[in-house]
Length: 354
Ligand SMILES: Cc1ncc(COP(=O)(O)O)c(C=O)c1O
Image 1 (cartoon, rainbow, N blue to C red):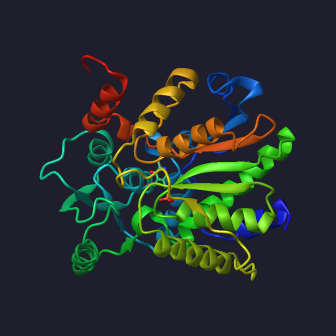
Image 2: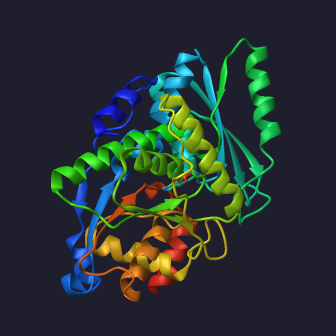
C-alpha cells in the first residue's frame, strides 16, 4: 500500500503525542571513515530514535503513544508494567504516565538485593513511579515471576476504585507494535526524500514489539530493505512467534485485512554473548567507537550489540562500500550512566580509574 494509505489507517487509532517526531536520519560519516572509508565501508545512516524526547528518549516513546492512547481511551487511572531493573521501557512508561497524569507501578527484576539508585532506576523514581523489585530468575532471558505480582497490584488498584491498564514487558503488544508501523512510515518518507534505498536496517531486538512493528510496516509498504534484528537475549523460537502474533494482531487493529504470513521475521542470534545485559568485548568496543566518532551514546544491553553486528559485517565484507545501511538507534543511554556499565567500559578501555 502507499505511504498515504498507511498514514490514513494509523490515523484512526487512539494516540497521544509523546515523542518529538520525526527523529533525524543522519549520515555517520566519521564512523564510516573509522571503519575503512568509502572504499571499504557502506554509507551508514543513523535513525535517531534515541532523540524521541520522552523522558530522555528511546524507541519506547513510539509504542507508548499508542499504548497510552489505548489506556486513556479505557479511562485508566494507572499503568503497570514490568522489566529488568535498568529497563528503558519501564523508565519511559513512568515518563509517559507522568505526562498523561496517570499513576505508574513498575515491577522490576534484579539480581542484586538493593540495586544502586542510578540510571533508569533513578529516573523511574524521579518520574513518580512506584517501584516493586523482584528477584530475576533467568539472566539469559531477563525474566522474573512477575505475572502474579502484576495481577496483585492491579487487583489492589481495583479494590480502591482505580482502573489499571497493564502494559506487557517492553510494551510489545499489538497496540505497542503500531508505534513502529508509524516509525516505518516516517523512515520510508525520509529515505524517499533522500533518494536512498538502503540494503539493511540494523536494530536491537529484545521483547520484539519493535520487530513486530518494523516487520509489519515494511511488509505493508513493500519496503526495499532487509530488516536486520540483532537479538539481545535468548528464547528465539517463542520470541519469533510472539513477534509474528503481535504483527498479525496489529494488522487486524489497522483493519487492513492483509496477512503477515509472507513477512520474514528474522533476528541474528550471534551477538548475545553470555546473556541479556551481559556485555561482550565487541559491544564494549562498538560503544566506544561510535562515541568517539559520532558522539552517539549507545548502551551495552541493546544498541551496542546491534552496532557490534554492523561493525562485524563491515569487517567481514558482508556489507560492501556500495551499500547503504540504516542503524536504528533505539536509545538506552541512561543505562550507560550506571556503575556496572562504567566498570565494563573502563575495563574494555584499560582506563586506570573511572
Ligand atoms: C534501547 C533499547 N533498544 C532496543 C530495545 C528492544 O526493543 P523491543 O523490546 O521492542 O524488542 C529496547 C527494549 O527495551 C531498548 O530499551
